[in-house]
Length: 324
Ligand SMILES: [Mn+2]
Image (cartoon, rainbow, N blue to C red; front, side, top):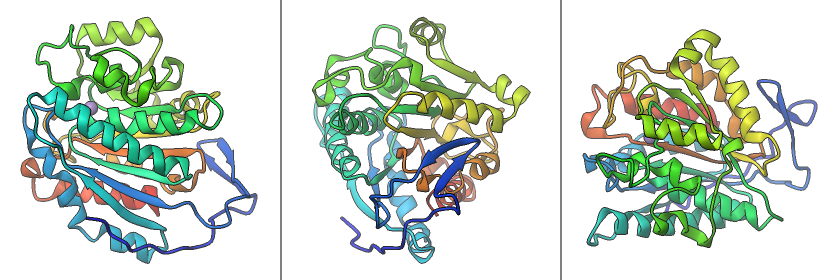
């Protein structure tokens, strides 16, 4: 189902024609007379997780007043599609199928300079999202996108190191070129991301093998204790610099379990001592207006585990902040 509502407004700009995030300044592309469109893609799949009910995340988000509120605020936004898995023999086959369809849609959208907003589903959807983004960027004369991965976990297992075999614990490794060939080779090339342009933020639960892989290939991890010590502002500033250094743009992937379970209980794997979403809201406010931002992803929302609608309200607030 596709929502056809959309509304054009002039390109937002500040008085200097530049946008500034934490001191990182990007130039507005003057060739864009109308704002680039923002399109939401739901991924109704929980095949990568032990509890598959985060498949119902996109529908729960869509049932809120989020889209209407953003349209009233002047955003050029529509709900492009919600992808459903085609049941097959194995989770790997299911996820390969849904991620290849997602990658194609994201590639088309980013190629047209639209901003993709992907709403999972479990975090295995990241394989499709960032494969599509990387594929689009490739056609602009080479190069790769950077990525800030905000998560309680590292999601950097390979089939050899994973005890559970669940693919939602593997997407970042896949994007960096390590994992099942069906996933690693999506869109016909690998890797989708370079280690020097990936930063993880908020990590506090991981296995040794994942940390070893990321350390060996040189991915920066901002563990939760560093966030406590230095503050979220300083950490996000550095993470965005990493994602922007010599890249063709960047993206942000947010696992809802990055936040404190008191704020975000509606996830499959809640881990205590997380980020405070209001802090991140403030830092990412209006980031959709940054022309270097290629895609935003929110994953692992399980409405069946939510408590008093807290997680849904958090998601609504985060998206309003980022996309307004
Ligand atoms: Mn994750």
